[in-house]
Length: 376
Image 1 (spheres, rainbow, N blue to C red):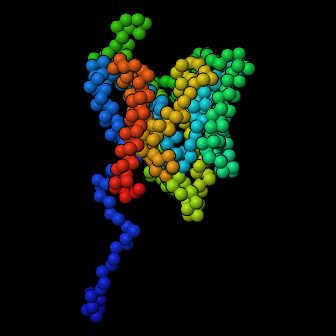
Image 2: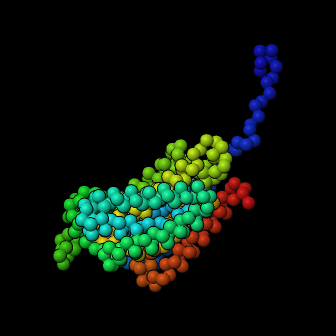
Image 3: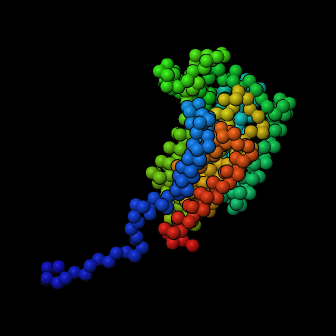
């Protein structure tokens, strides 16, 4: 009522604003398919390999490490794909970065920490070059990074052979002894905790051999720590910051985003650099763990990263995805790969299982999203 006693017209709701129930919000989350796939995979291997030791502490560590490897490169691939681009040079970057570390430290005699720094600087620079070429030439990132897939792989083999006459360079473990930066990539944490758990009988100890009396799990490998840190930071960046909104906008509609003031070009270049950074983290952990570098490492890792992201609910067209979903996709990768071994199944069926899970996750995500949002 106004002061004159007349009835005021009711305020009409904006038709563009729709209330979405919590259930619908949950159903249209990108990671829905990966969450369902993770549950199915765990239930399946509990049934077929539950008594094989797969879910014992040692078995859990095995598939945890494998999943962490996939997760590290999946984080970079996820954010880049949400921004609307691809990086097919990830696998070659892994091999290239590893050879750089081995050459600088073992062949040329510099400290390992310096070799790791050089590898990161060079890799991130190449990532920036990928992004710059995509932006400046207007070529699809698929083409540009496919070219770098071959350039980096060929350059890696050439440099290794021309300097050492071989494609595998050993001696990194010896060179890394006592190096504090190398320990961040190849060491373990919580050693004291696991020794205490073994003393309490909560985990087993070796009963014979040079490690007799030591716990079968003597710590959490740093590659798992890196995976967790990158997943958490990537999720926070994507969902809790303005830059995360820019990533979604750049992949959703880059023209509209540019007109709205979003620095689309800078966002995409930075995401290419992040992809290279993640690949180098993977390479460094691998080199320090194995104590050597090989020119053929990282083969097909770019596709495994993309598959993890797609299982996690990201769209190939960009603008939609989840770091948590990509991490779940990586977990599915690791569990299936190691689960087949524990179940005594022929290892070649790994890709069959993976293909089935990929199809089911994508179909489920697409169907639920269209059902809730009315997309066609």
